[in-house]
Amino acid sequence: MKAKARTTLTPRPAAPAARRSATTLRSLLPSIANQSVGTGGGVVAEAPRPKPVSRFEGPVREFLTYIRVECGFSSATLAAYGGDLRDLWVWMVERKHRAWSELTPDAIAEHLKTLEKRGLATSTIARHVATIRVFCRFLKTREHHDEDPADQLTQPQTWKRLPTVLGEEQIELLLQAPDPDALLYLRDVGLMELLYAGGLRASELAELDMSGVHFDLSVVRVLGKGQKERVVPIGLPAMRALRRYCEELREDLVREHTPTDRVFLSRTGQPITRVVVWQIVKRHAEKAGLDNVHPHTLRHSFATHLLAGGADLRVVQELLGHSNLETTQIYTHVDRSRLKEVLTKFHPRP
Picture 1 (cartoon, rainbow, N blue to C red):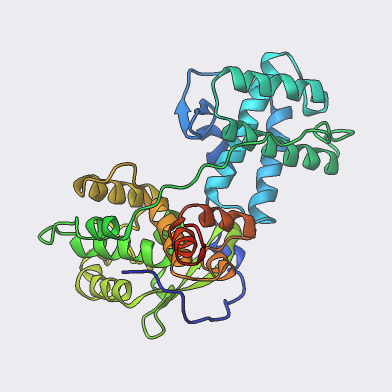
Picture 2 (picture 1 turned 120 degrees about the horizontal axis):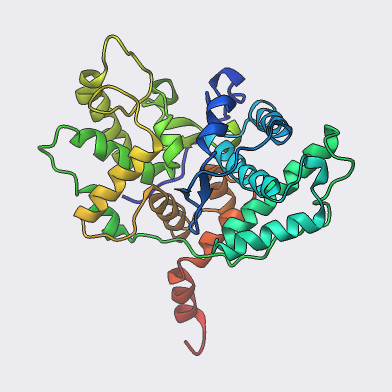
């Protein structure tokens, strides 16, 4: 059941803009009007806040359009940036500011202190800082501000938490948890097998199309962060589970009036969302007696097991779709079993 890294293909050019998120700015901004980011980074409902003036809303809409169309950011990133900026502009309105041109370094510092007093996690505040820095550069570039008020703003240092990883026996327990008599048994098994065998994100799996599955080559083509396309080799157990689902169940789920190319469907024939992927994994993990397991846990386990088995760090970086090697290096700190084995075998005083 170990994930294996083999078969190297050259990815096709990045997907056209037509395949990018269909999230509209008109629906995005109202949806975050009365929301804020909680201590764990999630969105929580709050009491209604003062309605922002258009002088603030216009540049934010322009900015979100830019990062969606020009940068190809995902809908999740759009929602995060929009929520952070909504918090900032509501804070500006509450303090009688009239436009983004009145945003100063002192005002930014005061806003960040307000976020800290609300009990937000350091990692969440760090994301707010990143959003403000990018947005302020945009304001200056588009002449909504005479200068960049966040030019001297530095990113707060955060501790890097080691990811939760399942052992191979725990992976087996999880994959065997679905009830064979359940209607969606084949879908759930194929879904979790693919998450572990390919190290896919929940959003990548939810958006996987049948055209991206190549059974003859044992690979899948996925669309990752920033609309970056990559080809991931998949082990035979996972490909067999996926093929069985597609041949024996998926065709029964597809509805004639709502045809879709998405691989994983609900019982009503609709493509599942990343939230549903989380729910499926969590439900079966609880049945297997495993705590705090989610789709990213399988991704962490995939990377850790590959490195523990001797895979090159650069190869794992490519498989995960990380743009920065430092992001991948965290997995070298998770499994110390090989290091201990080497010390025991070769050190004169183990």
